[in-house]
Image (cartoon, rainbow, N blue to C red; front, side, top):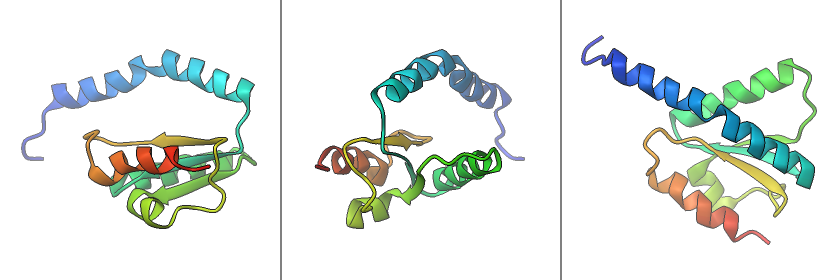
Length: 111
């Protein structure tokens, strides 16, 4: 593989592992407060990752109300099951993909 930077890839994965304790605390808080649904929202490859997450949840027998949305589509047409009690999980490798950034405003504007 050309231009493969093993150290960079290892660091990216380590960054993800390092935030697990913070995420676990956040998930505990969300569960205590309650939620109506969980939305995985991304674009391109991150939607593929979200599909993997949903597939794993289904295989484990989850009955959680999970939805996967393409960020551009969600910004344009929304989803009738999205409400103020929905949890949004956004994945972005760069952190600045315009459609994904726009999801923050779209989601915040839902009544």
